[in-house]
Length: 128
Image (cartoon, rainbow, N blue to C red):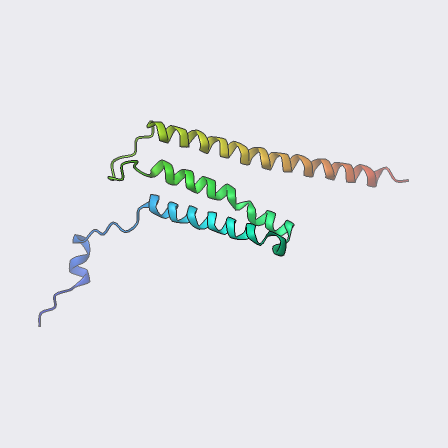
């Protein structure tokens, strides 16, 4: 009996390039931006507090988009990545700026939280 397809025999010889990270990061960035846009249209029905929590995904979308931009070949010919190309350097600088903005945002929130806790503890301890 002859069988034309045998997965054990054919597997090592077939290399299908289905997973390329820059494609998947592009898809993920697109879906995150679409999610952000859709939730922005329903901001009033969602409520400002919930919308703001959902809208923090813009930081993730920006980072995924920048990774996608850095990993993609500008000529779309699957050449090796040139990290010192003008467009790549621009994206790398933007990535550093986004990371700095995230750090400053978290630090600002943390300082506000610490200050509010300090004010509350002072007001609780100052009562006779």
